[in-house]
Length: 118
Image (tube, rainbow, N blue to C red; front, side):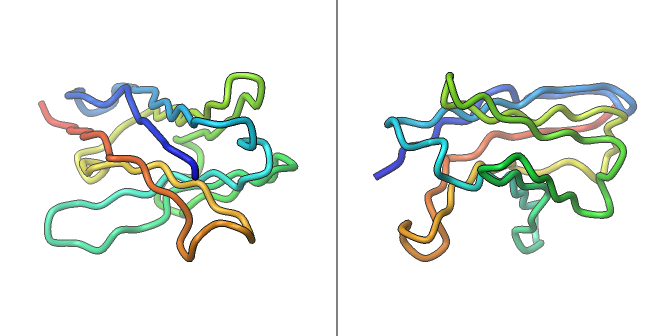
């Protein structure tokens, strides 16, 4: 069982920055691929970015060059640095931990709201 707790969301103006954090329980964090998903009102949840156990990163086209995912295995934490934020980035952001031994779909955090508005 892995428990995930996100933090760092909030209200930011267009062009601003935020950093989200996701802290994981347990001592097996390093064995999980970590991802950030988001869900805007009326839309399906979508993958924003992910980072594997070896550090390989994947980004959605809509955030390439603006968002950066990183992980600190010593702190059992994954981060999402979001720069040049746009109103269309407004969504609830969810942290996900997945591995071959995790339940289908992996483990999810409770989500944190990001609102980009002037």
